[in-house]
Image (cartoon, rainbow, N blue to C red; front, side, top):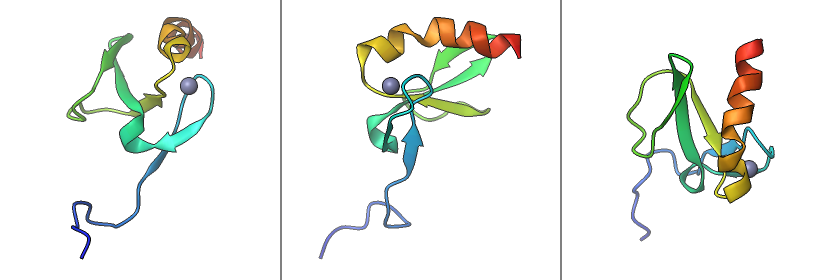
Length: 73
Ligand SMILES: [Zn+2]
């Protein structure tokens, strides 16, 4: 029997805010925005709306400019 580590049995999919690629939640990095700053939430413990980005270096590097655009809204 496979072990039932997850309670729903399917892997949640998240979309990278930078390149819009989709990936399983566990392969994406979560961050939240608090006081206009990006807080990386590698342990999934922070409150607030979570955003995700993928593992590519350019996506992480683009987060600052993404946040500046997001703040203009
Ligand atoms: Zn990406």
